[in-house]
Length: 209
Image 1 (cartoon, rainbow, N blue to C red):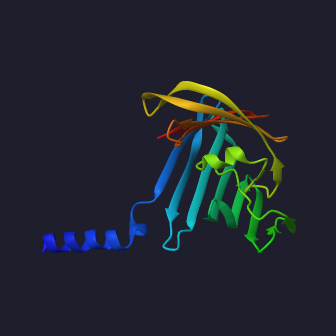
Image 2 (image 1 turned 60 degrees about the vertical axis):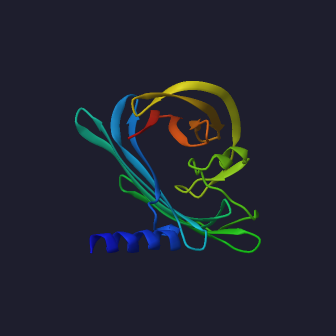
């Protein structure tokens, strides 16, 4: 019976490859060297070839053991051919909640929240760090705020970084916006390895678990 069940499962995986394990990135997040939470990304390929991404972040910044800033962010994104076709996101910053939603229509991407906006592009991308093709974009959509930001992206060359206790050669890139600066590291095969962001509140680092 066990052998029969295994053969059945193997057949299902061959017929329906989308039931294979989703691709995940799980990060420990720190601010100026102090742990503040986690940010997880789960990317799942659907039967029709679309990609469904769920991004979930939970931060709790403390001062003298007292919480001074709590942050929760959940975004569900649907992608097709490296283009965003649907976005639903909610962010809670202490008592402030922001909802962002949008859908790709034939010639524009329509944001219906937090305020109506039409982006006259047939292919919009968010800050989808998991996809190195964002490095070719001049504008990216911030799923937390709904802002479509101008970006300037610079390749900084190769360097060695430590990932999960191992030293790995990586390509480093810097994304400049008028709101923040982000450094990204990718493996030589294009896999996302790390992130660092400079904000007015401090330096945020993402380390793969």
